[in-house]
Length: 343
Image 1: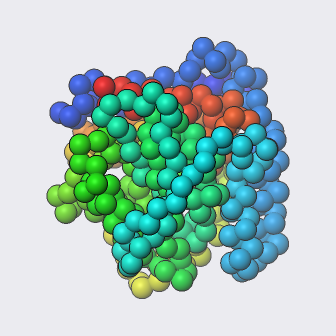
Image 2 (image 1 turned 135 degrees about the vertical axis):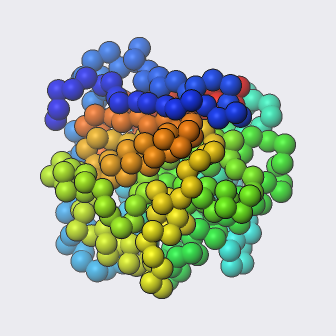
Image 3 (image 1 turned 60 degrees about the vertical axis):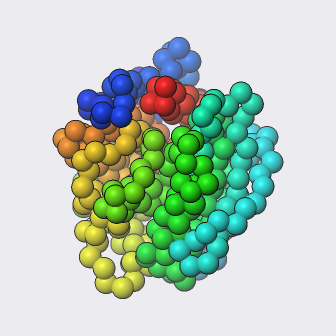
C-alpha cells in the first residue's frame, strides 16, 4: 500500500451557464487527517475482492457463477449490507416492455424541489441487480437527499447492446414525464457508469432534457480498451483482469457495432455542454485512465466535469461504506457536489 496521503488529484473546468460556481473538490479533510484514517477498512476490502477474483478465474465461462460473484461484490462486511432502508418495487417503461425498478425513499428533510436519482448498477453489462447494489445506491441516495430509482435493466449476453441503454433511456424519459419540476439526477458505477455517460451522449444527440447533475464511479469510457492503465495498473488491481475485458465487451456488443460508437464508448461522444458531472475513481484500478481521459476531454470542451482520484482505492470503492473510511468521505464529497450544483 502506498504511503501517499489521502489527498487526490482533482480538477474542474469553468462551470457551464447553468451553474453559478465552479465545482469544488472537497475531500473531507477534517475526517481524514492522515494515511491510516483514509485507509481504515481497506485491508478487509482488498482481501474480499481478491477472493472474488480468484473464484472468478476458477469458474471459467460459468455465467451463473459470475452473476453470483458479482451479486456479492460489496459483501465485505455485514455493516455494508445493513442499509437501514426498505425498498419498494415499481414497474417502469423499458426499451422492450416494462422493467422492474427498486425505489429507495428520500431521507427525512429532503430539499424542495425534490431530488430524484436514477441509479444504473454495474456488473460488466452481464450481471448485477438493484438488490446487489442497494448498499451503494441507498447511501448515495441518502447523501444526495434524493428518492433513488435503481433500474433492473436487461443484461447481456441474453439482451446485448443496445438493450440496456434503451432501458436506461426509457426510465429517464419516464422520470422526465412524471416529475418535470423536480431535480433529476443520473448516476452509475463501472458498466453502469458507462451506461450513464452513454445515455448523456444519446440524450444530447436527441436534444432531450439532460440531468441536472451526474455522478459516475469508475466508469468504463473506452470499450476499445485503449487506456494505458489497463497494463500499468494490472498488478495492483485486486479485482479486475484486463485480459477478460475484451470478452466482456464482446458479450455486450454482439452485432459488430463499432466500439467507437458514442453509445458504447462515451469517450467518443460530443463532450461539449455536458451537465455538471462528478467522476470518482480509485488509483489502484485498471480503469483509472478511462476516467482521466474522459474528464480531460470533457474539460477541454469546456464542460463542468470534476475528476477526483483516490490513492490506493480499488474499483468502485465508494460502495464499501461504512467499513471503508475513504468511501465515507467520497460519499460526503458527492453530497457536497450535489448541494453546490443544485443550490
